Image 1 (cartoon, rainbow, N blue to C red):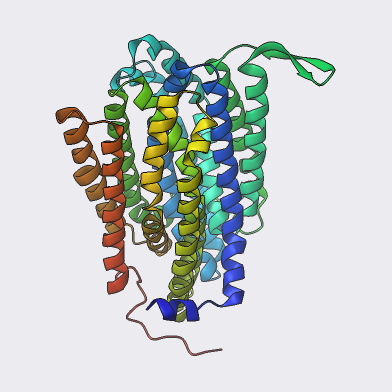
Image 2 (image 1 turned 45 degrees about the vertical axis):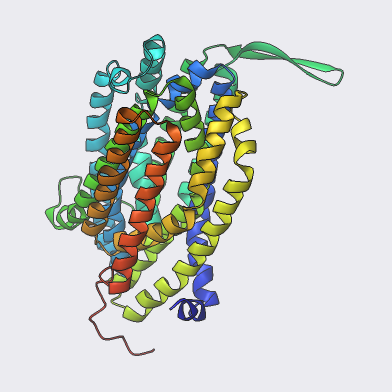
Length: 467
């Protein structure tokens, strides 16, 4: 089977795949680079500052992934509409994405701001830094409406084949964040270079300054991507009604709801996972936070290719092109496997050096390096799961991935981590071992799904004759 996959590597289609994937990869790379810079800047303020920012990051994933799940429904619908050359359907779906952004953004603004004082308590954060963590969280979620717009409208543009515009806006947002961090986190100081000295103004706001910088950057991004979507030639909602459209919302929600439940369930699992790790102490929390930040960069090839896989699979399904659907799987899987093997090897080799970028603590560096090298070995297996899940998102089959991810998260990772850390008194390494077992279970389940062909809704249809 593997030899057949490599024989299907068509240069023209590979060019299409990478033309869709590389902007998403670059966008995610920039986001990760900013996470690195944020972590390093905040880390320079001390371990307490790192813990205050990192301890609520899983709640950020919970909210962001829930909104992203809504986007999957619109991605599937718009990609299929484009494949079937139905521009009116794509524009109607775009207007419903605007409605979804307004509703979800308003709802999550009210929810996060009202709960900002109690979330650090739920996350078992050290009482000494709960006030700081609460203030950071509150400021970060003030611009929830533009954040929802950025997530959903970016997905709409990618579904229409435009991955470069979200990338450009993402790069600008990240640059704004970094520049504002530089001036808001630190106090006024003098920098010396050779015989020159420059006095740089600074607000000296520390962790609060980092939150303000992110909030301003998110707001700019939301405004810009809204303007771009409004003027887009293929999927502009201009002239379309913003009232609920059942013909569009029903199929979108049928795809989105299982994915939303999946992301909500797994993200809630991340919250529970992080809460148990936070209970292990400041060193474990800091090592886990930094290792998560480092690791995220090495999943970029996987998730960049997943976006391309979902878009192209949706196009092929909309065109009812069984051969193209089969050829896509034969190209994506070997490419993704090769990328993730390279990514995992680099993570394994440079884990200690990457940890040193964010911490000077020997304990934190040693513990973080160990868990990073453990997870590096599992990256190719997880990459396979990412691609098959991308295909299934593109064709609207989101129920099986929901079941697979919930079983893996709660049946393996959470139960295993609870037993290891809370009952048996084991540390961070045991928790990451449970995470790796979760990833391997996903690989096995998606491999079975792929081998049986249940991911492909066109598997029983006749192939179209060659043009």
